[in-house]
Image 1 (cartoon, rainbow over the protein chains, first blue to last red):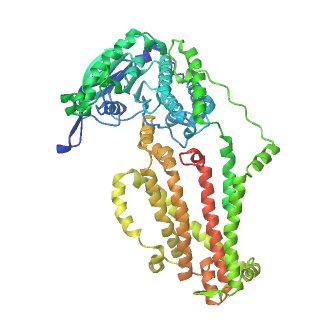
Image 2 (image 1 turned 60 degrees about the vertical axis):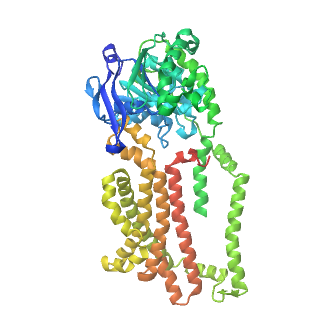
Image 3 (image 1 turned 90 degrees about the vertical axis):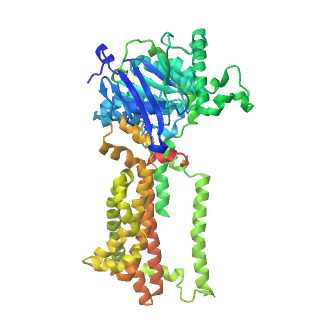
Length: 292
Length: 338
């Protein structure tokens, strides 16, 4: 099976979330996590979802992945309702999710094995993907022998091994240090450049979302709603130097402004009313947006 | 002792093979190298899939020479290992010395060594009966009972534990009866077992099974519960069916705890077996020991005890060795040997 991604196939991977509402618990313990959210990811588009912690962005991703059922509304992939997890949607998690008992190569092969692909074919695909991730020399290592950044790179290529139509990423670099994270963003944008599949990327890092995305949805504090939708007009392929351009800086400022209010609301309503100065805190020129 | 030492040696070549510099340092080096590598392909604008990527050639198979093997074996005799071996000798030597001195001077101060046979008498006993058919037959009978009881406990305990750990409803159904039966010691089952089973042999195997079953079951359940949920979610995203999930994720993920259960279960199985053999048995090492007491054959008592000790040690050593062979990744896990 040659899985050459022709132009017709590139049109697959359309995520459509309509009037989504998610409520956890019942009666007194009822928590509205997500309210009236509609968003979409066009085939081959890189879309980020950004918002303060606890705004329900991970919940939205869980729904698209098929782990959680929405209370209201629906999530569609290429017009079909999403009901359960499947290999048509690759998922990269925030926590390291490699199987510790499998070698690096066997981890990458896992999805193909589940699909019943024969051993020699699995091996070939896995080795090619590991080469792409720059980790071929580690194919026989166990995940516990690798650093966090290496584990996440393997997590990404493992999710790509089954040739999914979309890639769902839940703060995949959240646990990494800043330097590693910047390198990982470049690697991801390069890998994406080659595969050109739809990506829904969850993050709370403003620069990260701008650097990677074609489009960014900004969410409000709980209950999560879509506050704004921002297009990123930066050219591709993206390069690390672009983060110093005025266009990039302007986008950062715009997003910081949008998110500042929401992060204040997410922390505590009292802070929002009185302002941080009321608590004797010093707020820098960039405001609380710094915490993102 | 012997089985433990060999288990370590078996495990070692695997560890040595993976001895790399600090993973973090390697990570830094490789990520720098791969950025340039990735950038070169990044300019190719046509989208590709995993199957179209260039395939790197397989690594050449390394050849092994005898001298290399010998050298690596010699390299394993390190200072640390020598100290470990010396302390093990001291530990066992002290026990024998205490026994020897106690029996030599007929030590009598609350505990009485008056009737305790000397190490030499036990050694003589071993050379007399050691190769006799009766002694070896008793050992064979006990080992057969242990293996039967233990493997039945494993065959039922592991799958049941996986199911209870995974499914709330199975748990709701089985746990109440398990919680009632579990506190009953295997020895308390002896009278009931004799009534229950058609012959003596079956009832002893049953008691051995009871001893091994609960540690195996409970550790398996615990293993499933301690499995990181993200691994199950990851497997589902990669298209694992329910059956595949059990076989490829839940079972290997629970394996460290299952082996803890097997080791504990094996210990309890021996305790239960010896007690059952002493109370109701014909044949077996426990029966041999008790019969020696009835016949006032003191050296045979000690020989029976030492035999039980060695058999138990050999069994847990084998389990540990199989565990190391089946779970090589544990050497690198946090808190592992490296």
